[in-house]
Image 1 (cartoon, rainbow, N blue to C red):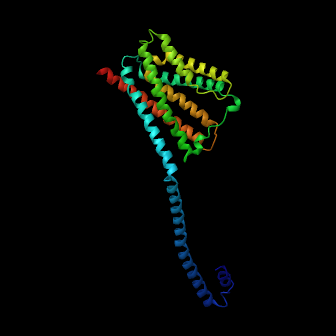
Image 2 (tube, rainbow, N blue to C red):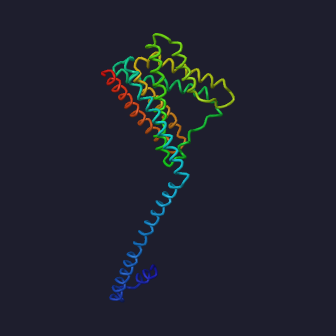
Image 3 (cartoon, rainbow, N blue to C red):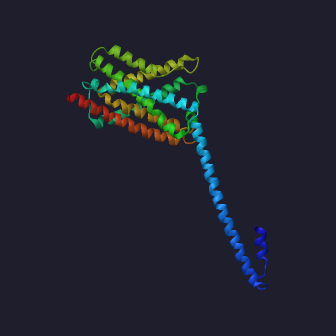
Length: 291
């Protein structure tokens, strides 16, 4: 085709005007016909490529290994949600006779308690983890959408912690009759939960791990005695603030592309979820008190 174009371009129009005009028309007709034939072929190639990619994605998803992992994850999530739901569902009845403060004050104090808890958690982590054990959190890279994994992953942990700490604080509040008797046993129970939250030691050096556990235990007990026992509906706000700060701190290190965006989205989700649970517990407590 370029040869024909070159030949027609070299034909002097003043020598053979009729031949030149006819040649240009034939050349344009040939180019138009070639273009019409090439466009369907290009569209067919694009369609076939997209269809092949979709088929590969479906084949990967329906592999037995992938289906098994998805099924196990759904079963585990269902069991965890059911147990957490049972524990959280019992909280309004235990909170009916507990302390209560104004909603606006509870909102501010709950967020402040979360900031205090995040500071305690950072300090405990610095004591527990030696320098050689520090590593960036790149676990979400194994997911299909890492940013979405970062945003959604903290929700299950939030629900589990709310169920555990909410039930523990409500039990201690009832057992101690509003922190007026049996304080020793109640304090030991809360301190033990704080110590165990430090997790397993990262190595053979147990000094830093034990010190981190003591810091966590003291922080949790101080938060309960000085603030949270005044109104236990602040617990969701405290947990949400703690976890949001922790997620943002991890995302700020940018361990992989999209980590910061995912952490910001996770903080927003945690804020919405914690606010919803805060309001839900207050409404449920008010409903139980009216019965």
